Image 1 (tube, one colour):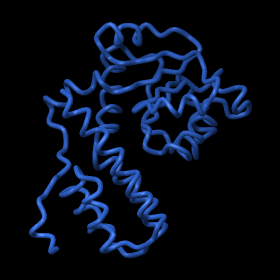
Image 2: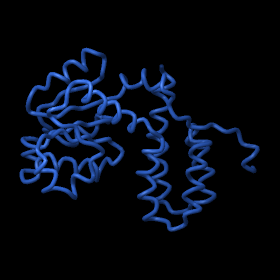
Image 3: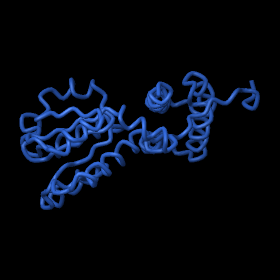
Image 4: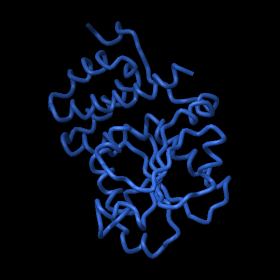
Length: 221
């Protein structure tokens, strides 16, 4: 069937009004071995934040599928990555779950300089001396990334580029995802007309699952 006869089922970006409601649905993990008053205040304001003093079991943590992780550096992950601590946890999360937005929570500029290659993989940084409203703004920006179709597509794109070299195919994938992505099966059927590589198709399937998870949260508002 030619595509112009197929009903479009687009993945629409969030409006500001939708985001203002959805940010309270985002699953946020805050990992620090100290209590931070800003976190308790955000919880009271309705944010869905869980505070962990550390990560004991990384597999259990990943299975919880957090949208945003705010991660301290020193004193975190010592039994998982004793030399790199929080930086080692960041590396693992970005290697294994690249679609999680990871914000590093630190007051140590020397550590960012020393671990620059790892620091570049973080989505953002929150200084430990930030006032409440600045902390809240940084968190909101991270949640906005986690709910952004473009953010997730660009992560998938970096992997797709390593598997196929045809830029036209990548742009075609983006067009199909935008126009038909709300129906995963339909979108994949159309994409298979342009892409045959099974690894690429798997990456795109994972992307569609993430984007539809966001869409379902929005539909439940």
